[in-house]
Image 1: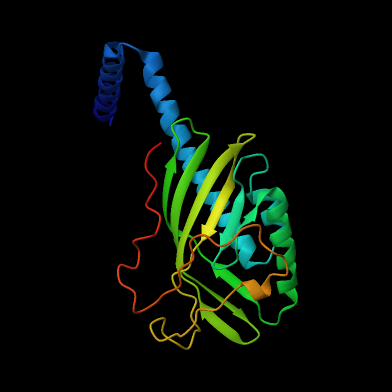
Image 2: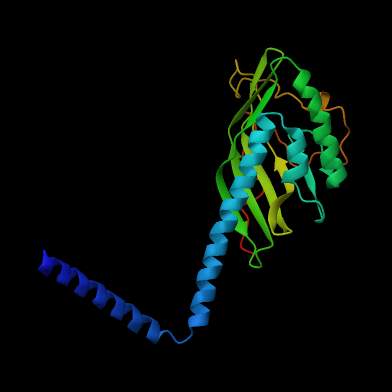
Length: 230
């Protein structure tokens, strides 16, 4: 037992000495610490952004629209906007609040829910750590008044850091299909509209939404690319 402890102690000493020698060879300890701090900050930012997006998705699902408007979106950044399907674009803090206030009416719709999961995140954080761009894939579904639909497609979301917290600057959800549950997206003759369910006019026309068309080729040629480092 004693011999084992001595061996273990010896190994600890050897390891410690090797670490000291390794650090002694490092010409600039401040540089190393800065690199480690940068890596930790990057990981913390990634977690914070994904947590923010999960909050948005859950509050949308549970119809907690006031929390979305209050806690998820930026307030002072340029280009604040949100759009989904053929909703049109709602701009600025006023537009965000107007949209989600209009959503309150869905609470009175029998059987209404909206489930937009956000998966497969591709997030590019700016070198200055003050903004980020992302692409997510969203498998989802919705229902209202006995009518059910599949809603699947990509999210394109930009973020900004405000007062040390990550917030959504711009969110675009562009479903590939919104077909009725009972029909295949290749057989659906229409993919529905969200304009009739929003009693608030948008500030600009929809920019990306292109519902599935089985006769169209090169389906994704006009879709945004994954964000590059910036």
